[in-house]
Amino acid sequence: MIRVEELTKTFGSVRAVDGISFEVRRGEILGLLGPNGAGKTTTLRMLTGFLAPTSGRIRVGDYTTAANPLEVKKITGYLPESAPLYPEMLVFDFLAFTADLRGIAPGERLRRIEEAAALCGIREVMHLPIAEISKGYKQRVGLAAVMLGDPEILVLDEPTSGLDPNQIVEIREIIRRIGKAKTVVFSTHILSEAEATCDRVVIIHRGKIAADSPTAELKEALGGKSRLALLLEGADAAAVEARLAGIPGVEGVAAAPPDEAGRVAVAVALAGGADPRAEIYRRIRGTDWTLLEFHLQRQSLEEVFRELTREG
Image 1 (spheres, rainbow, N blue to C red):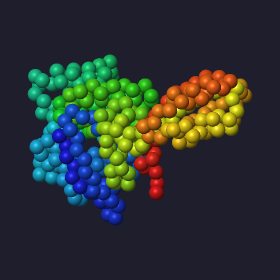
Image 2 (image 1 turned 90 degrees about the vertical axis):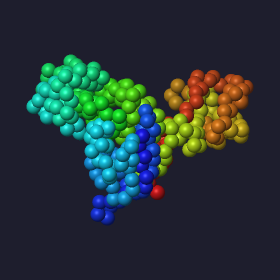
Image 3 (image 1 turned 180 degrees about the vertical axis):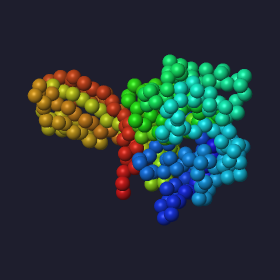
């Protein structure tokens, strides 16, 4: 659906995007991740034809952004980080105005508005001025305006920026619903959001692609790091470390000093793909320690992100 080839964008002496290439398949939800200044917004603006690349090529469906910019815009819906709204207009009037701009026939206009309002959950605010609704609703109104054109591709730049946790969950659910029928590309700083929503992530750092993979495969490819978290009662930290060290598949053991209740928290680092839980349990069972907690913690996308974008 989207093919990016050796895409570069410079602003004077600054190379904001540096020769990146990736593809987005039809019906895929792709998360574009990266720290501030990584080149995410610049990339999205080039994808949608709002910026011309310095070099490289972008193909969207059957068109290229260089040769067919209007055709690309017709099949692409773009919502920047700050939704471009008219605060003095009623929500319904703004959507009707947008429908007119998109050339939607009068006989189709009301149906399209109702469908977009239902999809984005804004029916209850259609009669209100945009200035009087919350930021979460403003984002939904912006998204509804984008969906009026029934785009094949939806490009969202930081769609949950500045929203509270409840609003983030609501926007995430809307993106999931849209993703069942559309190709979606969105940038985000919220790693849990990408992990829960995306089929695939592309991590950008200093204008280059640091990783491009389905979320689960990305974590596995970077070592599949995981650890065991234990909580013991009646144990000595040094004795715990000595007893669990040397077990095949255990890379390291770190036991904290006992807390006020006499409990010892233990972190056991595991080698990639290893699962020594049975042997660890047997060794603990052979003592007079009480095992209060014992669970596996796998490497999160946030840890992968920090590892890939660490300076130096």
